[in-house]
Image (cartoon, rainbow, N blue to C red; front, side, top):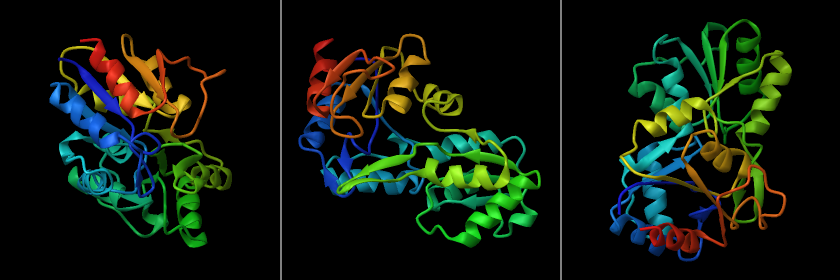
Length: 256
C-alpha cells in the first residue's frame, strides 16, 4: 500500500507511560503494509531519538528517530537562516534541534536575539523572567506549539501553550507558532512525504484535524482516546471518527 500516515503520539499511541490498548499492533500493521509511517508531535521536551525510544519502551513498537517529526524541529527551521543567539525556555528537544543546525543558545535572556518557548518541565520564575524580558526587549519570540494541555495518565497537564501565555502576557508580544497546525510544521511534514494519500491520525481537533484541513487532499481521522471522547460538534469536522488507533489503522488499510 502506498501513501503516508501522520500519527500523533500523546493521546493516540500512549498517555504518559501507559500504552493505549492495541497501539503497537496497529502501528505494526500500518508499517507492514508499506505506508510511510511518521510520528508527528507538538511535545518538544524530547529529541527525536528519545521519542523513538519512548515509543518502543511504552508500546513495544520499534520506531526509528527518522520517523519522528517534532515541533522543536519545526521551530528550529524558522531560525535556520538568521542563526540568532537564542534563549530556550524548554527542554532537550529544543536545544538539540537548534544545535543540529548550528544555532547557539545562551542562558542570559539579555543577550538573546530570539526566544524559543516550549514545554518546560523545569519551569521557574527566573526562566519566565529571562524569556519575557528578552522578548519585550526585541528578541524574536517563537513557540514550539500553543497546546494549552496534553493528556497524561491521570488527566490533562499544562502544555506549552500555558507557559507561552505567561511569556506573551509579561512581554506584550505575540509568538510565531511552529507546531501543528501551523505552516512550519506542515512544511516540515511535506519534506518527508512520499507519493500517495496522506492520512493524519490524532486526538486534538485544533492541532491534528486542523493540520489536515489546511493542506489540500490530506484526510483526517479523529481518535477518541485523548483530548476528546466524542465527536459531536468537533471543529474541524474529521473525515473519519474511530474509537482508537486500532480502528483507525483498519480504516486506512481498508482503502487499499
